[in-house]
Length: 116
Image (cartoon, rainbow, N blue to C red):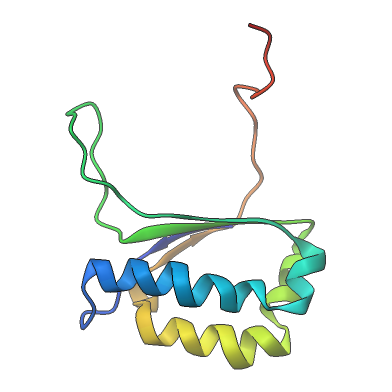
């Protein structure tokens, strides 16, 4: 699952990033079902680029979550901790209406362990 995140209008980008890393990440990590079913969770926040080779889209960050299965994802996202702790926190800093979610399968193109 990859989420392209937009902050709520009343937050600065810096406030959004701080909350995403320091508050929301630990709340998600506290989900008991995540210990079993979430294989990886990475947050990415845009940097100021010093090159013209690429441009950042107008998002405040991404969240990438790897689950062991679609069923595992469902167990995490329907858990009591997600519903009662994590989702309410999302409402404090995320603009859900303008956040995009993509659930899919990865295809590895360049292997990190390739021969040199």
